[in-house]
Length: 236
Ligand SMILES: [Zn+2]
Ligand SMILES: [Zn+2]
Ligand SMILES: [Zn+2]
Image (tube, rainbow, N blue to C red):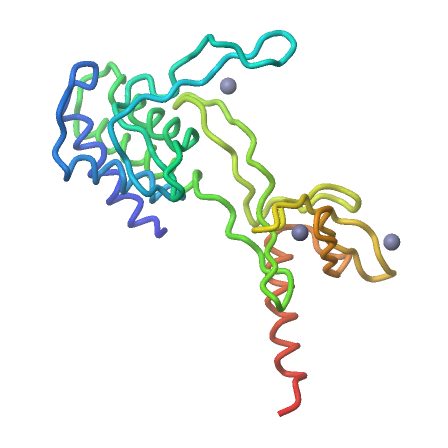
């Protein structure tokens, strides 16, 4: 997702949001639903469909059991998001509701300046919402995915804070992410004088990395370089 593309998607979304009163709306054009599909896709979610519907979350009681008491996930947004498996995507739906509310519930008068401000904020939020690009760990395409993102509250509402390439990959003996497809938790531990190992708790994959690696970005670069070295070593 280029920054330019994020701005285009955000602009279409904002112009649509400013056209309607979202407290009282029924009936949408397919092209309008597409604008919602495009922005949620640009934000890194993988929707199969965006469709009219409301999702609710359930409150827990003191013993952390689900209760029948509910709260709305998409308070204002008339659309819910369905993932590739045809299931309701709660996070994507919540994200869509947050960006819609940010623009639709702003009280100030609409000016060229406020429109530009919305575009900047929403395009920025699209960028922040994209998950970390998985890091290939082995020749056999094993990949490390970021840990489950933490919730982050700000003036826009509630979003998730994703891992970025310049985030530190935690010091030895700690959780670094998820083994893609396998789903196992991966930890970094000390293994030899020069190497740490990234281990999968579930399938026991073990990938050696240099102890000097401090960030996810350095790990990504290291793995790319290792693969180039491997290819060069291969007999012709
Ligand atoms: Zn919260
Ligand atoms: Zn050991
Ligand atoms: Zn695994």
